Figure (cartoon, rainbow, N blue to C red):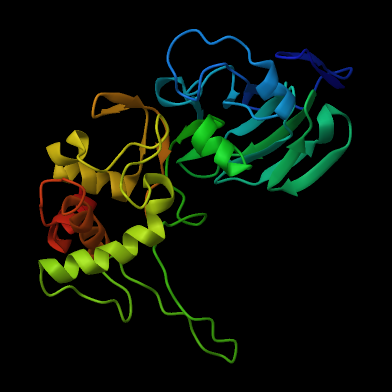
Length: 314
């Protein structure tokens, strides 16, 4: 068996008799691009040799462009199916740390050859190289494809998705939120209900809710949306003076609960990235959204735990 990387394409030469059968096969090609314009600058952008020489790409993407494997273009599979991904890295400069958030690779054909490693979380793919990864989709989920040099993913484009549909399997994953202290001397782990957790601070008024929400924001939100709520241009939408946020508070609550993928338009600019669901209590979600709504020129709305609970039930 051999996978050849043709700079920006893959040629697969299977072994005699072929590879073992699987339910789904996908081809994902990573590459780094160097343009004369800055990241996100519109229009045709010529190649910039100086950036290439310095190995400072403006874009690192899957299948030729940002968003190529997101939204309506996301890959799809069903629960119980085995998935094989042929992954190439055209480079020309950067090594890929390929990873699928939400899965462990059952098999990795290292560098596209005969050597197989098992139970791998992230695999290195050299520039001009390739690998084959295989795993089984056990539960319905949105599996996130990334280069785990993670700022490339969230700021330059190596972001994709496999949407897995089908019946839940609570023996594998129940989705309960838990907090607890490990007590090795015969103790127990305390479980956290959806509505709260032991010792959780409860806001008595709007001002307290804003203060508590700021702490949640700095723990869970600021890395992408920034401390000033301005987001990252073309990657993460702004929360400051956000027409999208102010238009529908229930939608905002559902996004925190469920996550969001696919293209949206915020303040006239299109964004097409992924926000994962946040494992927060009703109180924490109410607090952080109240903090956001009462800062950076937003509409001053207060979000309550009962509002969050209502959307969680839906």
